Length: 416
Image 1 (cartoon, helix red, strand yellow):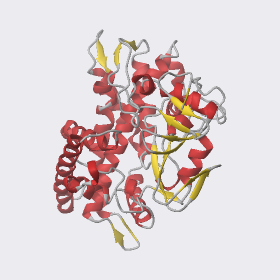
Image 2: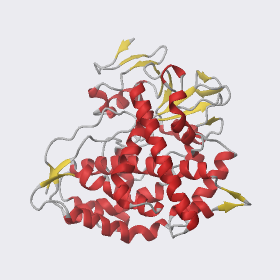
Image 3: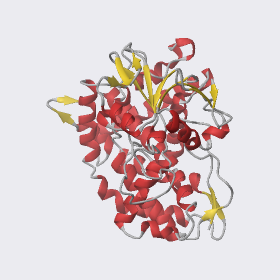
C-alpha cells in the first residue's frame, strides 16, 4: 500500500486497492477530504473494508444507477443485508418486509409495485401539502424556548417529516416516536459492521411495525378515508392490486427511507448554511432562490453516501475493472456530488450554480419515490426556520454520527 497525504487512508495505485476504515472519526466527520484525494488518483477503487469495487465519479455513478445490467435484487436470492454467519432464521420478520420492498426488487415485480404505489403517492398531490408543512413548521418553532437553545434535530428536523408521513398514511400522529424507534432499528441493518444484537432488534421492530400497519389496513378496509393507506388499498393497474404484504412493505419503505434521509438532510443543510455566515434569509429570498438553495444543500452534504448494486452479467464498470454476476458494486453518492470533473469548485457552497445536479436521490428506476415530498419539506422547513430566527447560530460544534452510509449529525444544538 502507498500512503496518501491522509494518515487514516492507504491507497495502492497499481491495484487500486483502498484501505480506509469507515468508522475512523477523521473520515466520517469529513469524508470530503478523502473523496478529494481519491478524485485525484482514481474514481474507481476496491474498498477492502467493504470487499467490493466502488465508483465515485459523477458520470460513472449516474450511469451505473441507470444501467439495467445492475440491480438491487441479489441474483442468488439472498437479501442485501446478510445475517451474521449467513444464518437468517432470526430475521424472518425483517426478511418478510424486505421481500416485498421496491428497494430490493427488479422488474417486472418492481415495475408493478412502483406503478401502484406511485399512483397512490402522487395522487396526494404533494404540492398541496405545502400549507400544512408550513403550519407544522411554525408550530414546532413556537415550542422553542424563548431566548434559549434547542437541539434542532429532535425539536424540529425529526418531528416534521414523521408527522407529515403519519398524517399521510392515516395512522395516529402520537405514534410518531414509536414509528421513529422502529424505523431507526430497521435502518441500522444497513450499517457497516452491525452485530447480532442489531439484527435481533431490527427483526423485533419489523414484526411490531408490520402488526401495527396490518391493524390499520384492516380498519381502512372497513372504513376508507382520504389517506395513503386507503389509496394503497384501492390502487390498481390493469386488474393488478397490491397484496397486504406489499402494502405493509411499501408503507414501511415510505416512512423509513423518506424520514431518515430528510432528517439528516435538514441537519446537514442548516449546518452548511450557517457556515456561510451573514444573513441566512438571503438563500430563501424567493421561491426560485429557495429551490436552488435546497438543491445545493442536497449536493453539498448529502444524507446518503453509498448505494450498492449487484451485477447481473460480466460488466466492465470502468477501464480494467470487470465485475462478475452476483458481485456488489458500491456507488458513492457523496463523492460523486463533489467530482471536480462535474462541478466547478465542488467544495464551495453555491446555490444556483450553472452545473447544479446531484445523485442524492439516486437515478433510474430506483430514483427516490419520495423526492418531491422531501424537496417540499426541505424548502418549507428551512425557509420558515431562518425567517423566524435569522440570528440562529450554533451553540456547540456538531459532530456526525458513526454511520458512514447515513451521513447525519448526532445533535444540532443551536441558539437564537
